[in-house]
Image 1 (cartoon, rainbow, N blue to C red):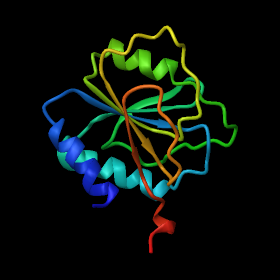
Image 2 (image 1 turned 180 degrees about the horizontal axis):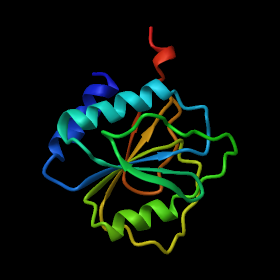
Image 3 (image 1 turned 90 degrees about the vertical axis):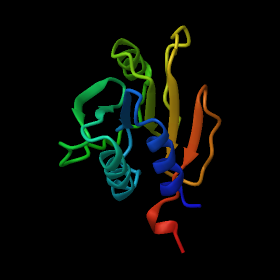
Image 4 (image 1 turned 135 degrees about the vertical axis):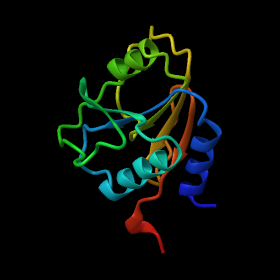
Length: 142
């Protein structure tokens, strides 16, 4: 089963929950086409899913239907704290976070919702909490 099918299954099972998607924009090494595919999957199930672009702070809050550009940076500084706090304040049930899981977060944070770390590579880092799903880069597919 491909990652797209796995992700679509997760999204579909969560369609009655309050979901959000976050993109770690601290690196420009993520395949933009993969991110666009992810956002498209969300739009198939739940139009206008809240979308957060963040690196060491939240840069933009929009929704998956309004995305025209994905603002990836190259500085490599990521903190998940602001996004995780935003999700808690918004009473999100399930947060899907596109990241390489190399960012920081305040360890005193209380996470009372599900977090699914969407890792845009074959590399499988250990996630601090929640679950992970590896997304194989489009260019690596045979």
